[in-house]
Amino acid sequence: MINVTPIVIEGKTVLGISVLLPKTNLIAITTGKGYIMCGALDVGLLNDRLKDRNIIAGRAVGVKTLDELMEAPLESVTHEAERVGITIGMQGKAALLRMLE
Image (cartoon, rainbow, N blue to C red; front, side, top):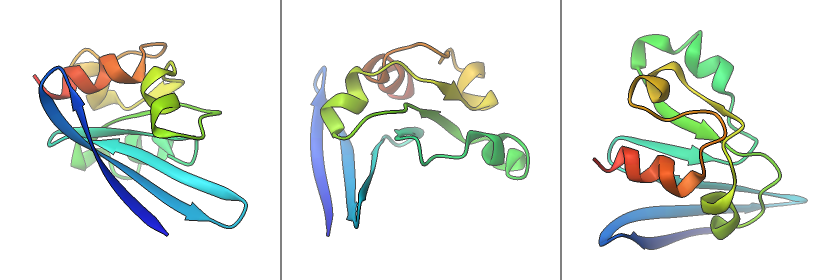
């Protein structure tokens, strides 16, 4: 099952996406510029093989819900995310706000 949930952060709407799979859930929250995602995100792949796409993204591990993803510190971020001020350890919600600027 796939769920798409609008989430309002400081008056701006982002989209939470949950993909319910056997024995795991994939969760992500996306803006028009980038996204944060659960531990399934391969930041190394985005930085290396897909670097020409300049993807703004961050990964949080150990999260099971969209709320947890917003509250968790980012464990890794892409080079492009760093370029716009998103850092490792930054809370997911703060990273999303940077993506909304």
